[in-house]
Each structure stands twice: as structure tokens, then as C-alpha cells.
Image (cartoon, rainbow, N blue to C red):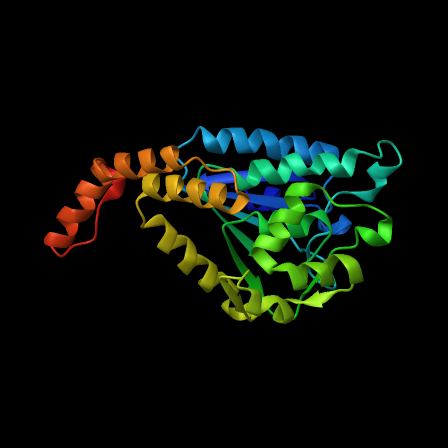
Length: 262
């Protein structure tokens, strides 16, 4: 990707290489708040990702020129005046991101607010920097949050932290949230990129189909919307599949499995 394009203010960008796609938010002057055009572009990118040979997706944000780094301030509040229901329709973006076929990693290099916190929670893994803040101001705006967002908050942060986030509406440090297990890693800025790369590489070494089917099953169980027969069928298909055959052979031969060659 052209480096100048990456650092230009504008709509999100999608870049992919070696089975890893990177989605970059690029409105640092607006604290990477998302407008309706951005949301539609993200939905289009999700379709592309689901239909491309992508195994891992990294969601990140440009913080160029910001005095205090902000990953995203969520949905652009300017849209509230034109369509009061627009913030509720933000749910479909987060739902689509959570349901992406590949494994997702959020590279959380700035503070995060509003609906963007739900986007973070919809990620399979989160690598975050220390010294940053998390805030959900929905009730300060008079808004009852949409159902799937509340479900994600409780599943990922637990009931007590979810009540603190919504009912108090105060900014919480990432360090305060770290015991919830929401972060795969919480590291200083100089460790951020190497840690992110380690996580992405580890995910890339796993069996892609088994990983993606297991992700789907785990999310369905967490949401309480799963079918035992469907999960059993996935398990049986995996046991009879080429990935498991390659994994067993690699184990017997004491070598790394070559899932990409299947």
C-alpha cells in the first residue's frame, strides 16, 4: 500500500498480504469517529474479506497528529440530528464484524469511546497500549444501548464492569479493565507492534477452517443461539477433514503442519 495514502485523512482502507487483511480507520482529525459513508465502506470490505482467502483481520486506526491518541470515538454524533435511530443501526456494523469468517485482532493504539468500544469487544483478540482510556457515554446522551452491544459487554467485561461503564459513564483506564481478560495483551507503546505481530503470526499458524468454525461455534454458544446438531456436525467434519489429517501427520513427523498447502 502507498504509505502516503495510508496516512491521508479519509475513509477506511483495506490492505491484505499473505492471508492477513488490515482495516485502517483514517480520520484522526475527527478522533476516527465513523460517519455513514465509513460504515457502508466497512460493510463492503467485510463482504470482500468473507469471500477472499483471508485468515486473519487486523483492525487498527491512524492516530497521526493527535495530541492524545484516540483509536475511535465511535459513531459521528453529528448524524444524530438527521436520523435519531442512526446510532442504533450502528449495531449491524458491529454484528457483521463479529461474524466475520476470519479471526479478528483489534490493534488498540488509542483511547476508545462510545460505539467503538463495542467494535473492540466484537474482536476475537485485542492487543492494547497502556495509559489509555475506555468510555461509554450512551446514558449521558440519553440513549439505551442496542441489545447485542449489551450482550457483548456482559460476555467480555462481566456484569459489574458493564454497569460501571454504562451507568457511571466515566472514563476507565485500560489497566482497570485488564483483569476482565478483554485484552490478549496490554503493553507499553514500544512493545505494541512486536506483540501485535506475535499474535497475528500465532493465529496464522493455526488450521484456518477449524479455527473459523470454532470461532463461529464459540460465538453462537456465548450468544445463546446455537444448535447442538450443527456444532456436532462441524466437529465431525473437522475430524474427517484434511486439516486434522495434516495435523496428525505433522505431529508424528515432528514438524510444523503445512495447513496453507491443503
